[in-house]
Image (cartoon, rainbow, N blue to C red; front, side, top):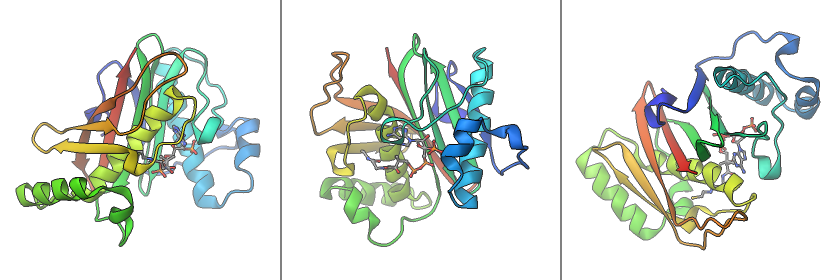
Length: 221
Ligand SMILES: CC(C)(COP(=O)(O)OP(=O)(O)OC[C@H]1O[C@@H](n2cnc3c(N)ncnc32)[C@H](O)[C@@H]1OP(=O)(O)O)[C@@H](O)C(=O)NCCC(=O)NCCS
């Protein structure tokens, strides 16, 4: 599923259920990090790391601990960029060599209307007008959830590039192309990065299938 929204060079792994994890599924540092979490959180944390290590393996990278770092962004091994996501019934990881891509952001959500009150907090008036137009074209898609999913993928791509700067939902304007399966997020705040790069926006892809919506973004080096 997630490969639908990423270019072929990105290595991915996904699972639609949590396997029975053996005690060595996590490195000791990871197990310590998640020890006090509730069972649901421990299972998603573990399964997505199993996915991430499988995807890393495809790049020839040996299993390593993947601990949350700055603002929760995963600490990838040197020379690797990537992203992880989990929601009910889905866990996925995507990785690439930093020589090939500067950043990756993925997000998955249940394909259902957002809970009451959320849309108003995460969209501008013009984005809501855009959503109304999309709903008239293709009423079977939950465009509100898709926009949310795209924005979370934006944040995951943005965060490592900016050294962990916060980006509010209202600080990017997202436009979805319903036919091409793409979206563009235009940044409404300066996108200066520590490496001198200046971000102005992100281009991504979206896909809806099997009760899920996924979004993926890659940023060129
Ligand atoms: C961080 C956030 C995007 C995670 O999204 P989510 O739908 O809640 O959860 P997901 O399961 O899809 O993703 C969780 C994973 O994201 C990754 N993640 C967390 N913080 C991250 C960050 N700052 N940068 C990159 N990846 C991050 C982690 O791998 C995490 O899994 P883990 O804790 O098991 O390692 C979300 O909780 C959040 O804080 N959003 C507010 C910021 C935002 O989205 N702004 C919109 C800008 S337009």
